[in-house]
Amino acid sequence: MNTSEIIIAGDTAGIEWRLPVLRFNGNDPKAPKVYIQAALHANELPGTALVHFLCEMLRQFESAGQIKSDIIVVPHANPIGAAQAHFGELQGRFDLGTRTNFNREFPLISVKDRDGLLEDLENRSAVDKLKRQLLHMALGCDLVIDLHCDDESLQYAYIDEAFWPEAADLASAMKMEAVLLSDGESSAFEEAVGFAWKYETPEKQSRLPGKLSVTVELRGRRDVYPDMAKEDADGLWQFLASRGAIDAAVSLPAFDGPAVPLDNIEMVRAPEAGTVLFHRNIGEWVGEGDVLATLITRPGMADGSIEIRAPQGGLIVTRSSERLVRRRADLMKIACKNASNATRKPGTLED
Image (cartoon, rainbow, N blue to C red; front, side, top):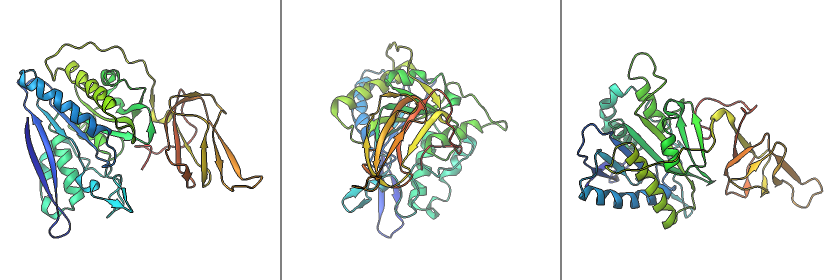
């Protein structure tokens, strides 16, 4: 394993950020090249824990000469966000300087223009430098895994329809409980990678065999435990072996969880501000009209609460960990058999 650092000059004199990058050199030039990063949202740490144990496994297989692919691992992809604490709480999702999500505004280019990402870096902001360095590394690979987590959540993934159902092997290996099929129409990291591949030719490609760019949601932010991290690391290792990146025989069962397009996700939101009392938990199947939560809007008043009901039946994939919410705050995602009646703009479900 080779270790290096990408040094990112800050926007203030005397400040710089260091981004550790781990590289494993494969022995088969025909094997798919792999890029794995964790904690692009700096306070989402299940992926960093996974990567720690995965690298232990990779070092063992490297010593035995069993790593076939070149593998790049970025254990914590956002040193800028990791330094953002506000009143004692880490703020890793949004850049405090621009209020932009760290997982948005990645350049949308063709993979043919990859090298242009690193041009004129000295005149760009620190966050833009970081995003361009990450995207540049990923576009040199074939399998791109972006490790995130949700709030309170099942194990699931966002997978562009261009990679499905081939990517069902990842869902199986990682024991995902749901897959959300995205349309690849945003500037999030994994969709920017897919965009670059789709537009490698003048005519947009709708299928990308042998490629994969995916956001894996490793349960919730508090699900950072040694046994979970080791199990997740083993699952990702099995996926890499199944794709020929590691010289090891594995057998994966068929993925049998729901795989639904984003149009079929019911985003349950708070109609008013108030205190949330949840009646249902992640992993539960609900029917149309079932009470999901009680929202106390005016405590003590006879008319001071609202029942929030399921728009249609489905599987509760995520739930908010907040119990005091603002109007229109996201409370749940429910994966459903049928499309939602709510209007959805192309791209990601949340900002």
